[in-house]
Amino acid sequence: MLGSSSHSPTGATYDVVAQSSEQGRSFIIRDTTIDPGGSIGWHWHQGTVIALVKQGTLYHLRSDCTVDAIYRAGDSFIEPRGPEHVHDGRNYGTTPVVLEIMYVVLAGSPLAQAPNLPITCP
Image (cartoon, rainbow, N blue to C red; front, side, top):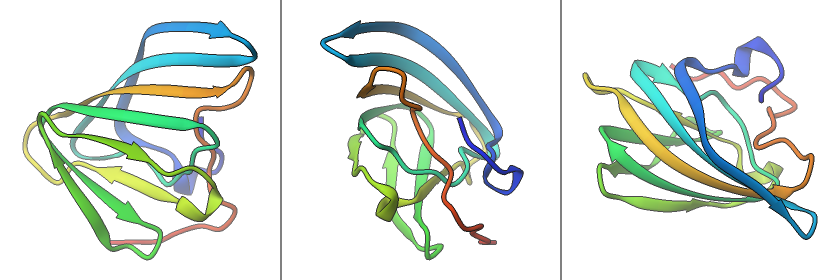
């Protein structure tokens, strides 16, 4: 999913729940679990991404390292698309964060892409 190791997820696992393709688009539903202290890794999306927080608290960081949103169990959100919307999802809590995410992308496209430049945040 992501390119360089400086942008790779740490403590995150992924499980595809369902997928289909129609009219040149892929529809993928994936459960993502982020362990305490874990991170999805810096990335951006070409397609539409709709997420539901099933468990825990997700901290959403922008590329300037500021937290622009905190999502708790039961919250949902839509990720903006495009390379100008680089972000990371982190778990600063003590319980795993579980997300159910639906991706709508052009068939054959990646679900996420790493940014061109490394981002370093504490």
